[in-house]
Image 1 (cartoon, one colour):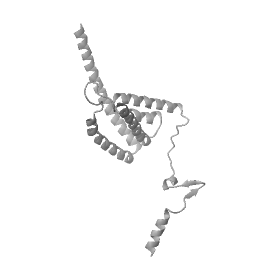
Image 2 (tube, one colour):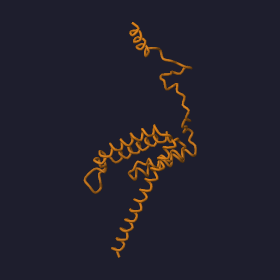
Image 3 (cartoon, one colour):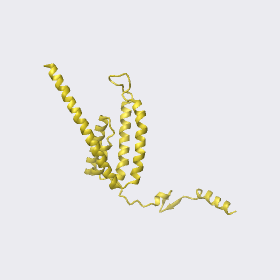
Image 4 (tube, helix red, strand yellow):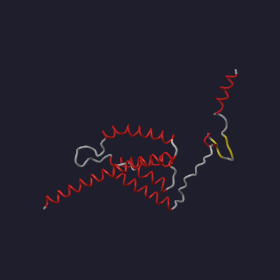
Length: 190
């Protein structure tokens, strides 16, 4: 009999009248949690925020033009220029990169490759890389929740330093190859 009464109490729990506190409807548990982090207030936009948003826009434009995501450019801007904590800046960067990827895909989905008879987007590469990218994102999300802000910043600095060093080496090789090609063309014309 007590089990049936307990079931009746649980069944009636959701049928009760809504809870109001000071004329505000309180619908869930999360409304009672006190948030200690400062809110990101973007209105009215300050000069620092306008410059940060300008740099982010330029970073996304350059990254899209280069065919990369741009997270390594955008994340430091969110942290340094806008003053957003790394714990908030990392997901915000992911959303920004996702938006840029959606825009680039939308603009390039119907284009054809200028030299080959295929689309400009190589869907085979997408199908091979996407599971790996999602796996890395999943592991990164777990690490993001488990690690402290200071350790995340150290990891970001180390990773971005390695990536910058690698990209600088590739850029030097490409510059050297371009200079040799231009020299060959100059000699052939003379």
